[in-house]
Image (cartoon, rainbow, N blue to C red):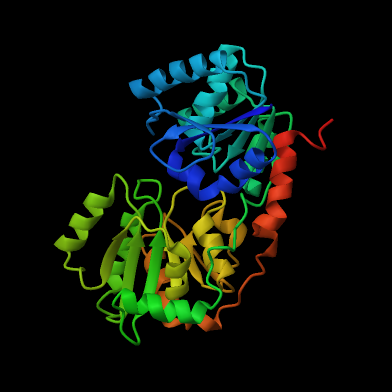
Length: 361
């Protein structure tokens, strides 16, 4: 029996984005094992591992030692690493352990800019030093970085991990009406939705500041934020301090994102870095306009003026103008983008071929 090990920083990441792949391997007779932090329902054997987002945290050193010991103890045929930090530690552990498994890294967005800074040089050194057998990238800009610095001998571009339509409402208008009622929204109120972990990278505070400057002008506007994380508390305090509680609502962790997207009038994000964001793809699939930061990943999906707005994080009024555009322009006047190539039925065969090394010479 062949054995797969799939790694990510958080179990929630594996549950949200990679269950179809884990189930595929399990159904095809593979022993499935996972490494991540936190509880979750996953097939096969799960190894709990404490990762910290600060690369030089002592706990990451401990995680590296545990991963190295695991790879020495267990024999894997295929290792698939997701997320930047867990991926780097997994690749380093494979090198230190002498593991001979096929090693695939899925890049969900490089966390550095190609600007020659000390940070970028450090990350590039690590990426080259612990190169995988196959590197999957989700946008053209990350692909260009990988090819420029020869970060892997086999680089493939994939359109994300694939959108599953099973959870999407069959009758979006009926779900929209029911969800808006459950959220307490009144007729004529315009709902802008933000989805994602509260973190410096997701940068929700930028949206809150922008919304605060237009809230009085648009009393019918509502900003709802779904998710949890390290910056949630500070964001909540900021909203209370600025008396925005009637227009800004924190939804906490939700498992009904497709229904929330059906209920909203537009999706917003001020993220600093993305690979190919699921929430934006889901919104566009449901024909919702988006107002998002002008970064890689977002640029791959958004055609400005057609299906959404891009704004610069360096422009103090950029987010404010983008939110205003969504509030002033009716949601049905935006032109939807064909998202068929991003569906899991189209993407999964490409990803599995890459995992298994099909087509490589």
